Length: 46
Image (cartoon, rainbow, N blue to C red; front, side):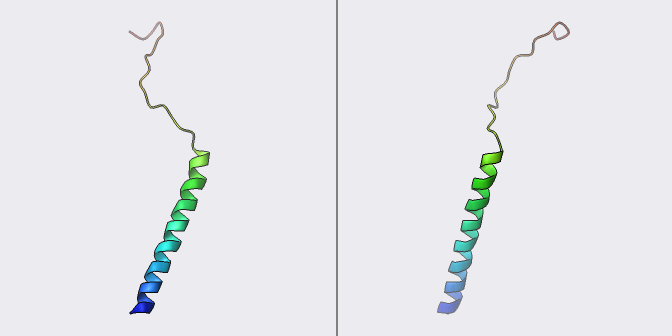
């Protein structure tokens, strides 16, 4: 029973570390966007 608990704990820790590493690596490459509306201007837009 203790062996199973250790394996589950180890798998959870390894999975968490992999998730953190992948999120940190991907967050550097993707620039943040403002996400707000902007008004369009031009002669053909009414």
